[in-house]
Image (tube, rainbow, N blue to C red; front, side):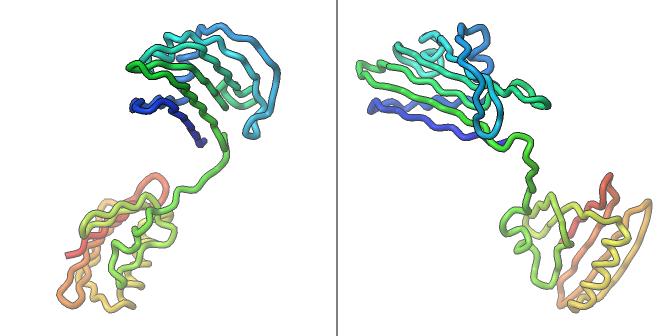
Length: 214
């Protein structure tokens, strides 16, 4: 699920930002008087559209200053399999701060509800490893800090260990040790004065891999 907010401050010198999340909006409209408009499809979701009769005090509490002429609308999801979440919310008002008069507007849209998405490895994650140290194919949850890289591999411990036995040897590394205990495999490799320590541990789905370079 993705959200998009937009806000317009039309009074010079107004520095406070009105930033709301869907949960905040739910709290804001709870108990507010409303008028049902009808069903509409918003951002690909069938919704129920309401006009809100918001209190100026509710906006003023978040925005500061004197607020009047508040208008608000909300579209609530109305589809089987979806909770009654806010899909779109808009509000506008007139405002006075420090003697200056202007208008304020805020809107929030929710997109891609229940749409599958893929978390990609962070940019530069592979670059954290030297060219002669491969990252395991389809690695996820990659964390790199100084000379330490950790990640999750989709395969079992022995499969990952065999990958590194083959790949590191082909890249000129010499294996110093290769031990297994309690399902964990540790390997130590050396090349041109450098040392590579590899620890592969089982986890619920696949393996956890820790590479340390010295």
